[in-house]
Amino acid sequence: MSMPKIRSLRNQLVLALCVLVSVVGVVQGISSWQLAKAGMSALLDLRLEQVATRLYHSGLADALPTTPARGSQPERDVYLTVWKDGISTPYRSTDPSLPLPREAEPGFTNAMVNGENWRIYTLREPSMVVQVAQRSRVRQDLAEARSLNTLWPMIVLVPLVWIAVLLVVRRALRRLTRLGRQVQAIDMAHFEQLSTSGVPTEIRPFILSINTMIERLEQSIESERKFIADAAHELRTPLTALQLQADNLAPHIAPGNQERFRELQSGIRRSGRMIAQLLRLARADAPMKADTLTRVDVSEVVVDAVAEVLPIAMQRGIDIGADEMTSAFVRANDADIGIALRNLVSNAIRYTPDGGKVDLSIQVRDGKVWIEVVDNGPGIDEALLPRVFDRFFRANVQIEGSGLGLSIVQAIVNRYGGEASLRNRTDGQSGIVASIGFPSVP
Ligand SMILES: Nc1ncnc2c1ncn2[C@@H]1O[C@H](COP(=O)(O)OP(=O)(O)OP(=O)(O)O)[C@@H](O)[C@H]1O
Ligand SMILES: [Mg+2]
Figure 1 (tube, helix red, strand yellow):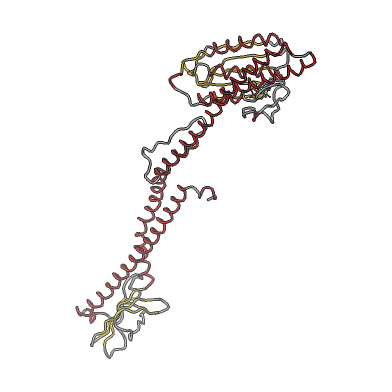
Figure 2 (cartoon, protein in one colour; figure 1 turned 60 degrees about the horizontal axis):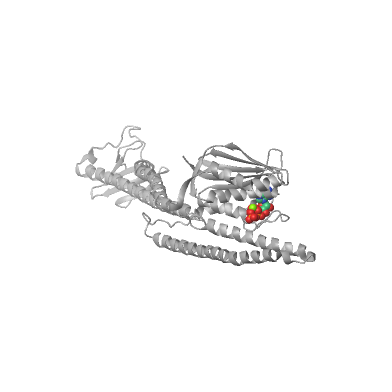
């Protein structure tokens, strides 16, 4: 198993429990196998002993022939030998004769006879010695065949327990995985408290502290946003006054200073636009109030946006129009969609050279309404494209702008669970395809 996998809590638990179960299973299996073997050999011993005592007490020992039939006994049988006092040839149950050790200790002994191991029970009585023997190999085979059966329950049970462990652990940790996904989904636009219902008690404190953290994060981001909004708002008034004063001053500027004065005026205008964009961004970042949502007609928004830039477009000889206009609706705050679209249209007009072409279209696909703005300007260097949505990022510093327009677009689409994208045209022409998509409503 690879390292990152073993770090998962689930895999660790499953592995540890499975190893544990296996060890218990193997130990239990071996010990019950050993016990069964011992029990079996005790039974076989008992049989040897019983045969010997029966032989002696029933007087049958006297009836044994000294010359038994040849090859009369099967291999697995017990072999009998009776030694009478004063007689050197024993009475025996087998031929060829098995030279059992007559001097063996009373009770059970193991001995090597004719190159084979034998288990022998010796009964020593005053009038005779009775010996009953069985091949150790036969006894072993018998014991092993029986005792192997005791392993079956383990062999079946252990894998079953493995599966059970896997299922139980996975089930217990599924909730944790789900929580992980929820935490991952948290971003600037979606601060959602994690629910503690159905959560194991061990994990509850963890979730509570994550929730506290989310709350604090939300508060600090909100206070930063408020500060920016307030600052931008406060700056607007003095800047308007400044603009007014500059305008009043215009007729009194000496002809030699006209050029520098115009620069001053355009600087003031630029600051004004920057502050207005900052304010829009702060508003777009604000938490959305659900009660101000209305059903917005997207084609109306597009028509308005085109109408608004038409004078500038005409002045610069840019052909702006909307070709594909599907009727579509989204749920949004009144002005949001318009602000997002106007930023895209203003980019298209601003970065497209005089005499260019800008096309708007509305499409509905995958449950989203897509508004697309296509221009035939220079496009954007592919290396810089991923950064255009960053705040204050400007790919083209020759043309005036604050670098906030696309950040505003991004903030607005985030708000509605939409998407925004900017890419270079791939139809052989230069230019940008800027699109925003919002969840569509009937
Ligand atoms: N249609 C486009 N064609 C070429 N470049 C573009 C286009 N749209 C955006 N850009 C590039 O992306 C940069 C970021 O755009 P963004 O709208 O965020 O800022 P801006 O236009 O500079 O300022 P603002 O919109 O706030 O006045 C721009 O500076 C410009 O270089
Ligand atoms: Mg812009």
